Image (tube, rainbow, N blue to C red; front, side):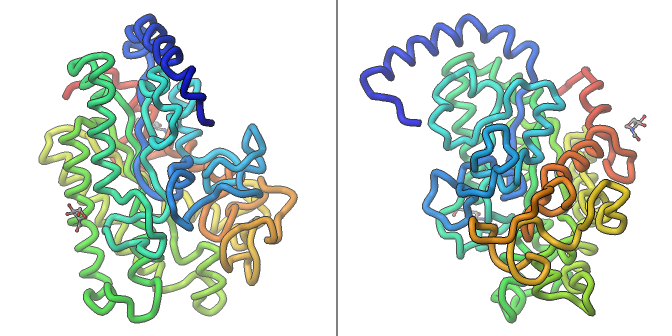
Length: 371
Ligand SMILES: *[C@@H]1O[C@H](CO)[C@@H](O)[C@H](O)[C@H]1NC(C)=O
Ligand SMILES: *[C@@H]1O[C@H](CO)[C@@H](O)[C@H](O)[C@H]1NC(C)=O
C-alpha cells in the first residue's frame, strides 16, 4: 500500500510519461465515472477514516475477485463496480482517499467519493464520527478537477466531467440513521414525517444543483429502497411480522417527491441531466417474488445474527450462508452481489417504470452530448 519514499519520485516521473502518452486516447474514448453517496456505493473510502462505519474485515468481500474485504458493503461487487463494467471501463474508479490515485491514469477514469453512514443532512450518521458528508464529497469533486486540470488542462477536464457518468445514492440514512435512529429523535420532534421529507428533498436539490454547477451532465439518482423491508427492520420494527409500516410510509412519501424534484431540475436546466432510478420498485420485485429472481429468501440476511440475521453488523462471528447468490440481502441493510447485478440490469435496460426519463442504454447511445 505505501510506497517507499525513495522510489516515489521515479514513480511520479513514470506516471508523467505514461499520462502524457495516453491522455489523448483516454479522454477521447473512455467515459469517466464518478460516484457519490453512502454505504450502498462506498468502495472503501471509510477504510482511510477513523469511523466505525466500515467493511474492512472478513467475511465482507468473500466473493470479491481477491476474496478479501475492500471496504465494499457487499459479499462481492457493489453497484458502482457493475455499472463500471457495463460502461466498458477496465477498472472501476478508486475511492478518492486511496493513495493510488496519485497515478494519473487511474485518476482519469473517475473517482468514488462515497462514504458509508452519510446522508443528505450533515447531522445524519453523527454516531459514525468521521465520515465524508455530502458537502465534503462535492468539495473533493472540485479538488479532483483542479488535480486533473494540472495534468490535462482546464478545457479537457471540463469535457471529461461533462461526458462522465455520475451515480449518486443517498437518503436512506436520513431515515434509518437519523429520523428513526432512536424514538423521539431530535429530527422527529422537529418535523412531522411529511415535513421532514419536504426538507430532505429541498436540501437534496441544493446538493444536485451544486453537482450540476461542478459540471456533471449525466447523473443517475437512486431513490431509497423499501427501507421497511430490509432484514434489520424486519428484526427490529416489524409490523405484524411484515415490513415496518412506518419506514414503508417514509419511502412511499420520499421516492415520488424525489422524481418530481429531478423532473423540475431538468426543466429548469432545459436538459435531461438527472435520471431517476426507482430502486424501490427494483427491490420490491424480488422482495415480493424472490424465487422469480433465483433467491431463496429476501427476508433473511446472509450474514448477521438474531432474528432474520438482522441484528447488528456482519462480522467474523456472525452466521454466514454458504450460497450467497440465493440471498437478496448480504447483511442487514445491503444487497448481495447477485441483487446488485439485477438492479444494474434494470438501470441499463429497464422500462420507464424503473428509469425516468430513460434507461442507461438509451443515455449511453445518445452520443450528442451538449452542455
Ligand atoms: C453542512 O455543513 C457545511 C459545512 O459546515 C455547510 O456549508 C452546509 O450548509 C451544511 N448543510 C446543511 C444542509 O446544513
Ligand atoms: C430502454 O429504453 C429504450 C428507449 O426508451 C426502450 O426502447 C427499451 O425498450 C428500454 N428497455 C426496456 C427493457 O424497456
